[in-house]
Image (cartoon, rainbow, N blue to C red; front, side, top):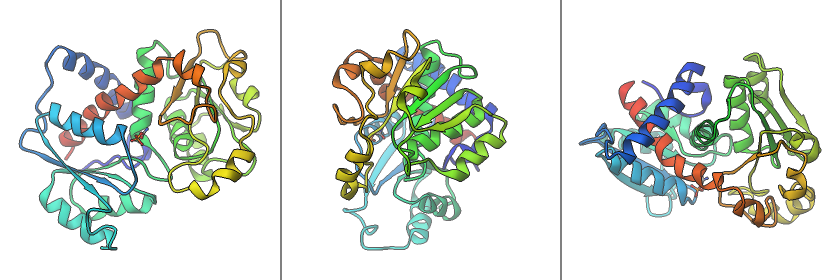
Length: 303
Ligand code: CP
């Protein structure tokens, strides 16, 4: 049985096929030809953190594929009461055919995978956000970038998104330069594994301009992720100068693509004018739907 807890769960060929098939599925959807892979199937969506895009895109995608979504939030369930994940997972696995989990620790999705007996999708943990990267990579491919040779600049926190970018670079071989403030470096083990796959072009720097120089893609995320609200003021100080604005984009390649997983804090990590002049950010948000539909089809095929 396959899961998607991180990009460690896919081979490079499987990742490439997921992206190609997601693009084909988007076309099929627009032609009114969605496969009904989830007919008579139920997918549970567990949210221990808030969401707009993940929740709506999964619920919509499950509907397109003929299935039924059941949303479980921690506050309205026994999760907040402290029921052990091992028990929640075993019970939900007896009702449902697949489970998506958005939570804090990576160990939680690992427990679901160990105990539920059905495919598990990581809908964001503190460590990685693979569903978002499927959409991001799909968007860049649709916009004509070569995922093997492009140069990507990550500007900001070495957070779950940065870690998933590193995993992606490990698989696909593109140049990835991450500009992070000192003390906000991405996960060292993920970085080592990506480099061990043979990509010698993944580098950490502390200057946004150095990262963005000649980049094909510039991407960022909020300075304080969910669960880090208490650090907001300190982070605002530490991340000064790490804004993606027109000034920074001047050093990137002409026609640079800008991505942001959203929601954004306009005027903090990204200028409002950059969001408004880079509609690919909304293609990226839309592609959560198509990429995750393809992911669910692939997981059903590999049960
Ligand atoms: N990008 C993302 O995961 O958005 P949500 O938090 O709205 O799901």
